[in-house]
Image (cartoon, rainbow, N blue to C red; front, side):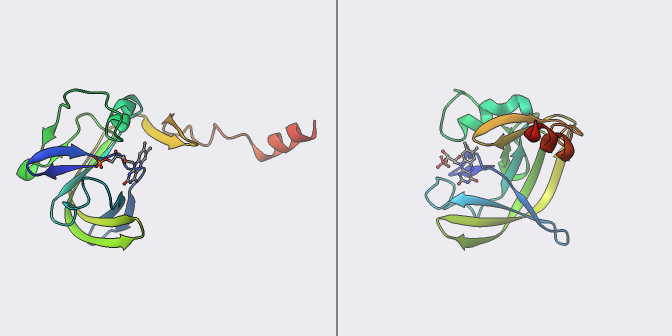
Amino acid sequence: MSLLIDGKPHGLTVNSFTSVSLDPPLVLICVDKGSKSADALGRAPFAINVLTAKQEDYAWHFAGKAQFTDIPWHHGQDGLPFLPDTLARILCAPWSVNDGGDHLVVIGKVFDIHSSENDALAFFSGQFSRLQPGKAQKALPKKETSIQQEMN
Ligand SMILES: Cc1cc2nc3c(=O)[nH]c(=O)nc-3n(C[C@H](O)[C@H](O)[C@H](O)COP(=O)(O)O)c2cc1C
């Protein structure tokens, strides 16, 4: 996700977002209360940048493992920063910030959305991987096959 903090673009890698409501269109992300973004959320609009399989470097960069010296930010309404060439971008106005233990459950109201055709970056079992349309199920062995293999 990305937002402006004190007028400067800031990004934070989050593992997922969730659809909350269709009318109004609401989505949520969970953000560590100790993160730099925590104070600004609730007041500032934010962007959800869904990364493509080729954008793993962004995920590491915004998780605090710098890969870039300069981020090629694009800017939307009121300067809201978002990443270029993502699988999807979802621009949100602040809706609510709720207590979620050591995280904030941040709900945003979607005011703009854009998507592209690309493979997605997935995070599973501690590793980044590529998620291809229509291939997720094919990657899983058929139940009969795996039972058969276990018996052999
Ligand atoms: C795969 C992955 C998923 C993460 N998901 C979250 C998340 O959902 N929420 C969160 O607050 N931090 C998450 N983090 C950790 C933050 O990206 C990291 O703490 C970041 O450095 C915080 O930056 P900031 O304090 O500068 O905003 C994740 C990190 C990785 C590598």
